[in-house]
Amino acid sequence: MPIDERHSMTARFLRLALFPVALFLLWRMSVAEIDKTPQENRLPALSRETFQLVQDSIFRTINQDYQAVRPILASSCFDCHSKFTKYPWYYKLPLVKSAIDGHIKEASESLDLSADFPFPGKEPVFQLLEAVREEVEESKMPPISYRLFHWGKLIEGAARDSLLNWIDDAKAIIKKFHDEHGHLIEAEPLEDKPGP
Image (cartoon, rainbow, N blue to C red; front, side, top):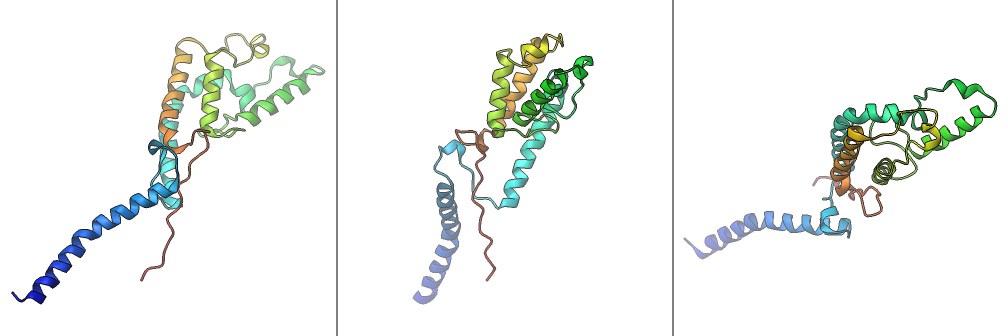
């Protein structure tokens, strides 16, 4: 075999063998540039559509488990934190209506459980989960002022354990998509480059 032919075959082999390695190295460099957070919080470069599909899939998974604890929240939280308020008999009393309306407005702005997960609120979803966990764990919600007139609304026992477990599981699932402040980490989109 002539030297030129062997050199051409060697060059072709090297190009074919090194191409996947070069692609892998370029991909790793792009991942490192996406965000400077710790390795466990890094996301690969994704198109916006792919990122949205991944996030929607994660939320669907969380919502499947949420259906088991939703009745707990419906019983103890929906009167103030949703559009499904069941007004008490004393709602129409003078001064009571405006006080209840103000409390419901404030509560639903900070956390609205009307729709499935992710819940809208004043904080990013990860921080909302942490806040709900803390409030339930410390028996701060529902507040005492509500429980005085609505006995049996404190989340406790097996219901409390189920809700706290769901919150912990949901946080573990979405943790890789949030920074240390609870804000969603969006992968920088891959640029759509026109074909050759």
